[in-house]
Image 1: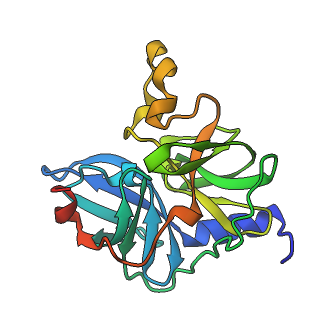
Image 2 (image 1 turned 90 degrees about the vertical axis):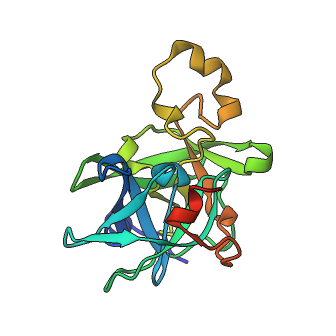
Length: 218
C-alpha cells in the first residue's frame, strides 16, 4: 500500500463514477445522485437516490443514457443498492478490505456542484454511529450537494471506505426544518457534517437480487 496524491484519487474517482437518475412514472426526473463501479458491471449507489423510481437511468461517460433494470443486491435500511450495468471501458474502484477507517483519518470524496462538474473534497472522519438494524455509519466533517449522494468515500490509499449516504429517510438530509434536528439521529441524519455507509456493509452475494419494478413491491 502506498499513499496516493489527491490528483490520483480524483482521477480514479471521476473515471469510475456516473450520475444516476431517478425517473418517475411520467418519465420525469425526480432525483439525481452519483454511483460508482466496484467491480466490472457492478454499479453501487445509495438506495435513497433511486427510492420510489419507476425507471433508473445512468448517465454514461459520453453522456449516453443507459437504463438500469437489474438489481444485483440491496439493503434499503442500510441505504445501498448494487445494479448490474454493462458499460464498456468503466474502471472499478478498490475496496478497503482491511476495514481500517479510524476517527481522525484523512479522507476524500467527489462533490458535484453542477451536472458535469466534480470537485475533490478533502475531509476527515469525525465519528462513527451505530443505527441498530440499519448498521453502522461513518461521520465525515463536510457537507455536500445532493447530487453527490452515492459517491465513493476514499482513504489516503485511494481505497473505498464507504459511500456517501446513510439516511433512513430519503431526502431527510436536505430538509430545512428547525424542529427536525432534534430527531435527526433516529433517522440517520448527521447532526454535523455528513454520513457515509461503510463499504463493509455492502453484501454483493446477490441474495437479494430483483428488478427495479420489483423494488416497488418491497
